[in-house]
Image (cartoon, rainbow, N blue to C red; front, side):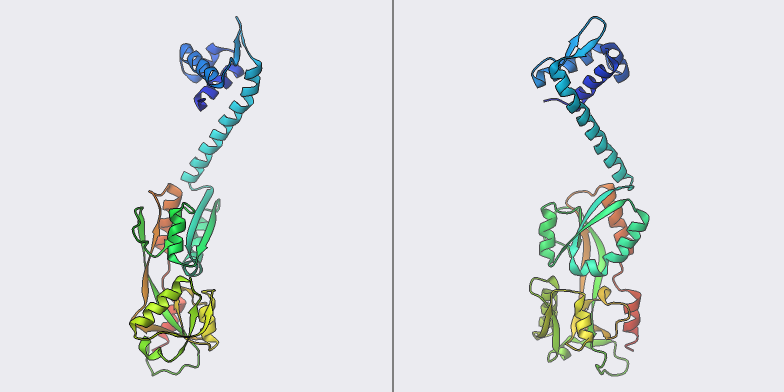
Length: 304
C-alpha cells in the first residue's frame, strides 16, 4: 500500500528533477529515497519514473499517478491544519448533545460566552427528549460531548456540573399564607397539572415526584414543548413542575419551591478523554452553568 511519505518522495523528485537534490531537501540518503520510490512503484504496479543520465522524467503511469499524489499530500496538510486549529481553539466544529430542558435553560448563556471567546468554532446542537435517548446517541458517536443526567454504566469520562433545582409554576391568582416559600406537593394532589408528553424525560420526573408525595398528577394538558409548561401554568391551566432555569424573565405567575425538593444532578460526559476543544467547552460549561438564575431566585424570595 502506498504511503504519504512515498507520495512526498515522488513529488519532490519530480519537482527538483533529480534524486540527489530531492534527497537533500528531504534530509534522507539517496539510497533510502530510491528504495521508497521503488516501493511505491511496486505498490501501484509499474514504473513511475524513467531514470535518465542527467534527469528523470515521468512515465505514462507516473503522469497518471502524480496528480493523485499531490492531492493526497494537500488533503493531509489540510487535515493537519484543521487539527492544529482545533487544538488552538481557533476554528473547527463541536458536536454537542443534550435534552430539551437543558438546551432551553443552562446552555444559552454558556453558548453565548463560548461564542464570544471562540467565534471561529461552530457548534452543532443535537437535542433529545429523554436522557436514555441522549445516552444512546452519545454511545453511537453522534456527538463529542453530552450534557444531561449521569448515564448508567458509562465507561467514559464524566464531569459533574451541579444540581439542577425544580420549581413549581402556578397561576398568579393562587392564594397562599403570608411568608410561604415552599408548597408541599401533597397539598397539590387535587389540583390540575400541566404535564409533559410521553417520551419527555420530565414526564417521568414529574410522575416520580408526585408518586413520592402519594398521588398521581391529574393531567389538564400535556405539552411537547418544555418551555410552554410555565406559560400554561401562568395562564391558569394547572400547576407545572419545571427546571428553575427555564422560567422566562418577566414571568407573571407564581414561582415556589416544592416540598420535598425536586432536584437532579447534571453532568457532561464523553466517550474517551476529551480533545482540547471539547475539554475547553466542558471547562466553560462547569464554570458558567447557572442552575438557579437570579430572576428566579428573586421570584422565590418574593414568596416570603
